[in-house]
Image 1 (cartoon, rainbow, N blue to C red):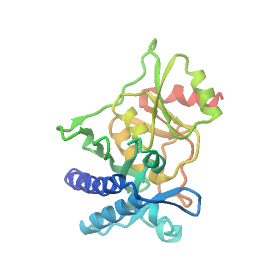
Image 2: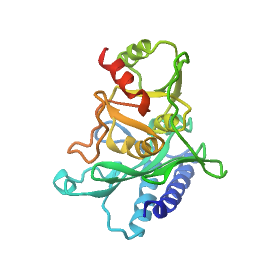
Image 3: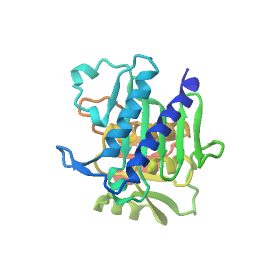
Image 4: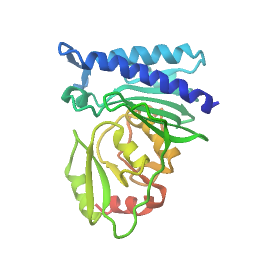
Length: 267
């Protein structure tokens, strides 16, 4: 079923990307602030409308949780075995900076795990997508999609580490120093996880706060590409928790998991 469902979700992400680009091209577009002081643009809301309409139009009957509808109570959510988890515009700060490193994120969660994910960067025209039992793929600028796979770090090579363009901290710097020789790749939004999924990077540590909708879609891509997204103790991230907050996490090839977890826990 997921194989048949995936192309339609990619199409919905494409449509949401088009809605975002209409706002992106408008110099008069405005930015407001949410109650938690995070930015909100007209593009967030436009993409949310497109995605919500598209998913409801599939008539599958699965509930939908978006960053823009996060007020749904846990009392209502806790019985959800399958639901859509959406970030209509991940990387709003990157959108405001106009560097193109923002994405549309759509994930399907089953029993707390992401089983389908689509991550689309409309400015870059790059779409990563995956589904359980199907694999992980990337489509660039209208070219045919290609399968992707994580790459383990080989001894003697620098570790290619992905870092956030908008977030940095002393603990992450300390962790990088424990890795030995490394190369740092700066990137915004959930594209950081996707760089690991396609083998362009070996490791992405996130030692700071994120929400479930920030990671779910890209988590599905990483997982189907042979990688892992886990907390600092090696436990895979789970979704639909009461507060919707992720723990600090690591993204890497499964083969590298034990040593990367050890690196972090010796900080």
